[in-house]
Length: 319
View 1 (cartoon, rainbow, N blue to C red):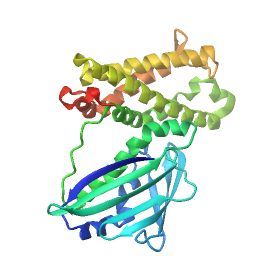
View 2: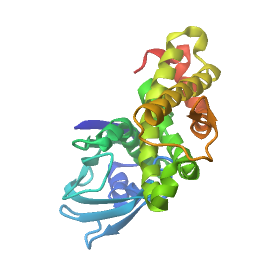
View 3: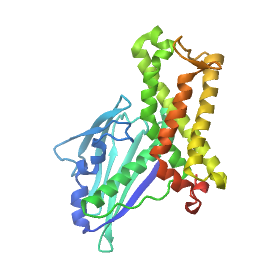
């Protein structure tokens, strides 16, 4: 299990804070809106008669992620007003990047208000491709989730969100993989006719191939971003956004070219149709894909990248 947490101080008494946080819909409000973290998907809530305000209350959530169905069943396991509440997954889950989790919040008097700690304790999928994807995305998702809950509570009571500290390189690479995933997904679907699978097996099989390839893109994006950012962090003159963006493109294109050669010419895992333009036997579309999408990711995370690589932030030594 891995534990992540977020802490804020709310400008109200613990009793008032608990009354707000005890509402499971308010605590999960960020999940009901499409977001980059959910790759454009969202979750909806169904409450039992206890509405999550008693031990044993059951909360059911459903939604989608890259077209894949998600379903989660949570049960409130602890509730001690006004200091603590805990809920956990129960029964079979369809979480993809997590096998299960347990989360909650603690309140205590702090200064002139209430000190809030929101935390999550999660387990990765036991095996398979989703364990690898979860290794990359689960920490980022968990950090986003508890951070949103804490900051949403602070905004509700009129406080200012806590300023985010510079992300370490590993977290930044995971954010890059998450931010670029929807663009990779669109690109994978758009260039399917340039591969023989489209004509041989039709749109249905091609759709699932696009989903599979998007997952592969996410893994490759994390790996190439981590390598490019670590290279920039290691060289003082490269500790800037321009060098990082250049590195993301160069490492991504190089890795894609090698992968395409291995997959098409050595292992015959896929093949190009006559419509695919080629450069030295490599499909032009994936090369352009890994030239354009990394730039999108670099611009989307421009401030985070600059902060992580700034010498004063120590970003180059964070892993």
